[in-house]
Image (cartoon, rainbow, N blue to C red; front, side, top):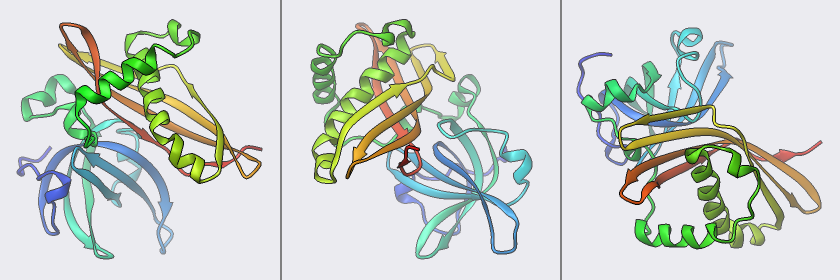
Length: 237
């Protein structure tokens, strides 16, 4: 990509900047503009926030360069749209960890950080894991097992909020990983996941993607961060 400078983290972005950076592509949707032309609407994130992006040129080629749930390298420019900063994408590709670490790529920089201490979350996760029923998760590799357990922790944290919205009977199905990348003591896994629940008597289904970042230490692989991305839930027919 271009030799332009690296953009600041999302929280520090402002309009009229030109450069490149690494992000997690949380959502990717093909849409039609008012003139009938197809464009790609993106939801991007790093550890500081969420940013809307747009691919309006060379759409047919660039849409094949990445998927939702991928870490991506983007070359583009920022502009103000409806009072918010968005990123107009000129070039985009899936991250190559071996190649891109030399330019500062780190998985944990591309996933929203929690305000809670990592040690506290890990202790809570370990407690939850002790009560997770054994099942098909045991047939999946280490990274996928970590992803499933991490999601249990995440869904537990949402339980009270969902109860307030009338959601009950939530169940999560973790699919087989579609991408696993391990480079030294860092790894990430992307896996399709489905969340079903009932709301006001109607069974709802939310199909999304779970992206997990892991770091290997003396005690083995531990989850550093994760992100769940999906469109709005829809009634199950």
